[in-house]
Length: 417
Image (tube, rainbow, N blue to C red; front, side, top):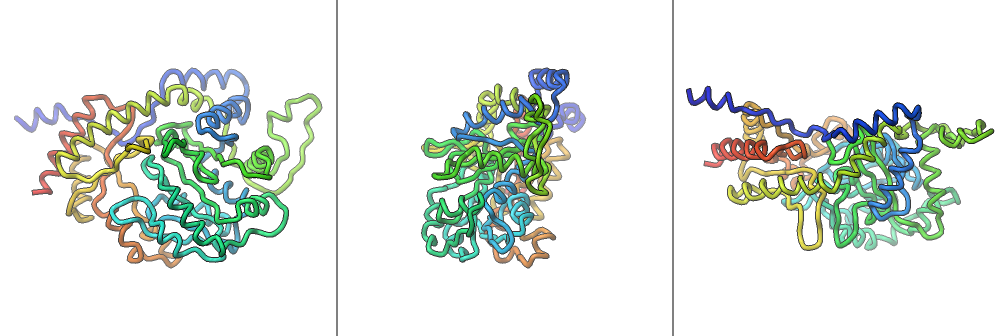
């Protein structure tokens, strides 16, 4: 009978559904009625507002963070023969975007008991071929870019900028060092040392995928720091060219009287954002501070549970930083990979859907085929081995959070005896 009562009270807690209100729905409907559904005025307005939010001069909205990261590399002239340093502990997009350009990815291990890359390892693998390093602000927590810039500066003498006077060459020459890229897919709205995500790395990409705090269904964006001697409008225009077949005018520009003609500057790509996507984003941005606050309230509840149980977890705020509260990673002391998998199944049977962020890239078929072996990255594997990510989203009610905590506590304690 007790089991029957428990089943009657069972909830189903999805891992990460999008938080879409009537405001987003109404704005999308208005965009549809307007007759302008591809890249247009709403996309341009979202770019303007995001730049203001990130404290940067320009933002370009695209169809994914992967496209944004790849175009960051291409705008900076990074490609065949170059090397890009990437943490082993991340999602594939952090590495695949560089590979798309023809560059070679060089993985580095994590710090011990930490998701951040080991900055000493970064310095150790820099060569004359290294053009960029990608930091990953995992879970919405901004990395220690001071240490990363110090690692880059320590090997500045090895840097060889691209020759020529094209945009990428001029950017490399102006920087005079390895470029620092932020894979900020999780971190829109995060801050460190008084600076917002987007105004710390040389170039930053954001994700607006359906599972992110801020969504446009699919979607992403790039932003960058001002570069002395390089015009931001020229950089922005290069993103436009790369994202729209190399076409010299977008559809909005061609609406001007007599402006039908355009040129194709290069045989490039198709990854622009649409106004339907931007319509979602505009209303998400209106609501975003409240959404971040709600995530923080849930994190406080999870923190109290984990601290009571002796469970390791990400720290989302401190004296000099505030994360975007994107993911809640927990690590079960002493648990093996097999045990972790059993816990995930038992939680799912109770209706609590969890995940793992991430399985290190050297464990994946594609990267093993490139010659990488997880044995070279012991810290990344150690962090992954006993990791479980809890549901963290703004569709959770207080009662849902109670349910997650109650069931996590019961299931995990069985394995901690």
